[in-house]
Length: 428
Image (cartoon, rainbow, N blue to C red; front, top):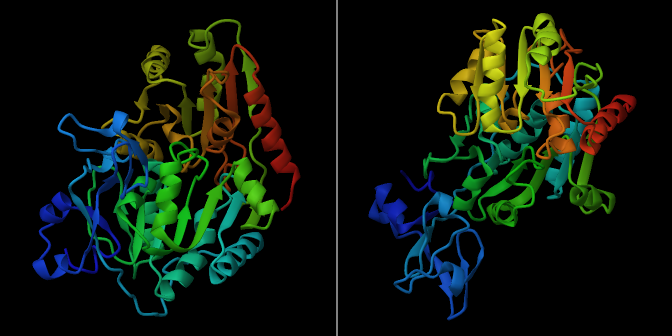
């Protein structure tokens, strides 16, 4: 590694040693105590978590942080190395994207750039399939051309993997470094695409940070990840969501942050409204497979079937197999997760059964959606809206069916249907 590609990063002493940094680079780093503490309380310098002796003290007397241990353990008595920021000269960066924004998308793009120019945070509230990524392109070009470092982050690795080829194609002259769990402290230049956790490795590094799917787990409600974004930012933070939190909407109403609102998809067609199918007993039976799911499969080139738990994946798969329908399954710990998602995209398989790991950030052409056990407590209204949003995303097939199959009709289901209908009535 060189100075430029560790710029702004916080590395542990062991990471710096593993990275084989030359002595002249190491001497430029500012050294910070990994953990500061007294007899009772302490603070982690990497994630800012508050520590206590009862919870964070090892038998040998040293302290460690449990909050950010996913990035490797930091303990008292060691140091973090913070490397000086890299200065990038302004340049006229050209987009290698040949698409064209709609009038509504162009309006949003201008609003985003205005907030960036004023150093203001901004919420982009847009329905699933509105083209949020494309609306970001002018903003990203502006920030990179100004010499700012840029980070696009998401709580979900699937979203990062989905965005990686699109951003690489649009910014051929400044391809982003891609980071997610297990990637470690790899070289990072001016442009970073990563999961939010990776920002814990940076401090005061990015003039623009875009947080995609800001309402998604694990970012939503996690103070550590919110701190990571703030600590890594030196300028505007842009929040993207189809279902923004009450807190973000309140900040927008109070003019504390800017806001853009786009209730229509880029192709202009309304969002598919979920159809409710109530069943008397378990949703995992042959009647459901034969009379409900088979209809979706017959009308769409692809079908996503959502289930609430990993244990339900194989149950649904075997039922489909009994009707002659071959399906694959994915979940968070599935080692072939990327390959199976790509198989559905390529048409190698027609049906993919998944947990909520694919509820957002992925796009498939001509894809119907079935949510089994839609009344499960795990499925909040925002999750149901996101799952429904996987259907009808392409202009050629805007009305792909969405089915919520359950024993009862829950408040979350009613709220999801109501929100989708409300968005369809609005014009933005």
